Image 1: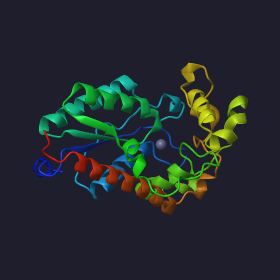
Image 2: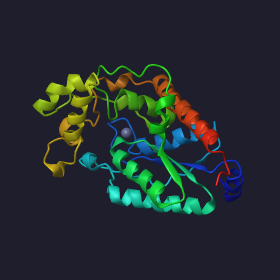
Image 3: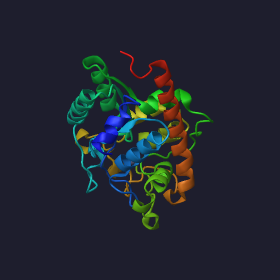
Length: 267
Ligand SMILES: [Zn+2]
């Protein structure tokens, strides 16, 4: 967008989406920038349906547990929150008041919560984590969790095939057998089934930097970087479209509701 276009947009909205992703390996098939490129595209799809600025700030996120895979770039949570907080101050100076943090990387979750709280507590702006705020607007049954399928797996690769199709190389896609520590392997079926306690303790231990000594970095658990029990070759753009549209529509519904609850120009 041009600066005059931003001025024009400010007559219709005070909302801005701040996408946040990561630069980390995504298996043999996906680009390093999968999370960031995907979350920017998703932000744009939301902005096509409701007036809101999309302002990408950073490409890298917090990904220390992927560092065994070359190309991964990780920044400390402290740095990320500070850069986004300072960027929010620039946008506040131009008249944007409401910040929708759109997170494309689970490893940023705590950083995003802190950023949201800082904006709310320390500035004239108001912030929410968009997918979290949109959760009550999700329609249809949640996908039943019965198989383990996480990082660079079938779901994520499907979304990449929909959002950034020219960057995914399915001819080399390959799921490696999971090589989890025995006690984690043992509770995997409960995690896959969505047991909340099993999932909580599993994620407290799994997918952590090699420096923690836990033996749960991505490389420890999967040789290709695909962290899934499914064959990643079964990913499809059609599934990616369905999943993306569900999240986009819910986000738009939340934004419209916030616009009703707090009309533009409210002091
Ligand atoms: Zn990802």
